[in-house]
Image (cartoon, rainbow, N blue to C red):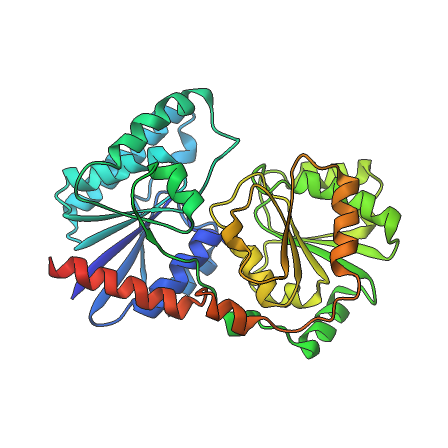
Length: 373
């Protein structure tokens, strides 16, 4: 049996966690035993229930790191706890899912604990929310990835360059359940009735409410869109630290009655059915899995230039500069959606290699190959 540990920062409804759960569910069997380690406790009991239903064990130190106010000390405690955990357990492969270059410190801990096979998997590209000390230290952490013995993977070329520089890597596409996100006219009617949006022109966004996802700019875009189409409505799915600030901004822009904040949603595939257009003005993304989901559902998808071009897996996807004005974004949305007849693009997304079953098969080959070394 091959024992694999998937290392995460946290267990939430984010794209990385969804990807890891999807892969783990498909690979966890008698030959490959997968466990998930998270620095922080799951945000909800539902994640424990999901893991249990898949036969996957969630691991962690059990320590409440939020009580430690000094960030360097908090990071040190997480590192030490992970080192102790790896020493106690014996995994054939450590799969480290990375958002920032300093995450490689966990790989160093795994190596100190005696782990032979460590996969560094980048899920993020350039970030605007990095502190000055982190910017100074990032080149050092990137240099650590050059050490022999690490296996490098990334969800996009941009994510690989951000995390590892110019080193060669394996592309692991962020696959989704394409059948689940396939467009259904019947589900569209049902979901729009549930939301009570009638025949409105529904613009949507799915993602954590944070600086990276840039929903503040999205509200400005939507305020301009309303001037062009008064029947427009904005659907925002996700929770996060900026929720109250975004709701306040919607009030200030006098558009709150036209904005639906759905909070964290378990089944976003239904929301995509109700939308007419997907707008993704992120400041940065490793890939932008929500954009892949939206295209699968047959939605015109407008991304910022902070989203890697690999996210354009169909002709439905277009890009706009973050420097463009909200009015220019609104005009582009109208232009893209004018006269569009919607259909499912599940087949095209599968052909592009973004079905999670195919990604799972690729990763299974990698795990088995490493275990045989």
